[in-house]
Length: 191
Length: 265
Image (tube, rainbow over all chains, first blue to last red; front, side, top):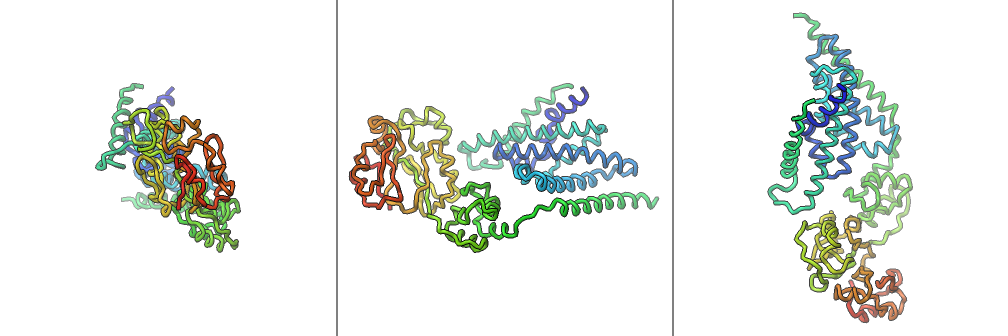
């Protein structure tokens, strides 16, 4: 039950993009088409689950025993960056078709602050290993949900005649803001 | 102050860096994917517009396919003969000169010729308009003129003129992007400089075609019967020119009562 609460909280209430404003860069950059947005979403789910597991292990088995927990930011960046690199190499070798689908998005995730945000929030909330992974998957599903919905909205917007002053990114930011307000409704959920 | 409070962080983070670095270096060797050295060379010859006109996901994918032998060296429709020659030099194959093609809009139902069934005030988008009872034109085959093809063209070769799309054949590189977005499937790739083309796509019955649009092909057979080369055929009330047989004599264009079959170039 606890895990379910963590999952729903991560997907809707504390949605990393819509409520915590993390991972905005890929959210705006890769959301022009629903197809690519879905690819990015899946890649983030994959990486975030791995990253939350790996960062939990390093934090609890290396940093805490050495009383170096104040170095968590640097350590997490190191872990995530090398993990993504490794995953990219591994996928390229083991499954070219998966690489075709996810490959272009993986380097983008290396510097995705939502991934770092999940690792940090796992640590701050003192989750155990299972909870940390569930939170990671939930956060990533929330990211995927947000980016796919947003891509759908942008596809519709692209068909319209737009005032030149707000064409492109300005309007994307305005609609992202409105979407964020809509997601605010979830914060009323008490779990 | 204890020296360990400096030593431990440096050692642990530095150690993690070294371990991860070594691990990645090892993985890079272990998981190395052999790429053919010709792939980047072929890729350099290609234009790099990533338009997808070749049918592959982009210039990188086409370069890969050419080296693997899945695609011909003249697989790039944008670069044409010049690029095919360069790619052929890399691959050690003589490039057969590919025929230059251009996009052609098979509709002449402009605002003066084609009747409308309602006035459209919606979003200026062909797909959207096509969803509303097939668009405002009486002819359900005709160009809607909202310019999805214009938006799709990376080379500025299309424009809307008097309510229908027109191709600038000098700018067109035959990437085929417009042919994919047209909801009426009106745009075809035809040989550059082909003299006679049918500027209509209506399969309606002759009377219906005539009532809908004064420029429509009615399938009256005059062109097919009078063509000395037997290059024109009629199928489902629509004339079709066999570009390999057509000599451009112009007999059909003279006979056509609606001028749906027209002389170009």
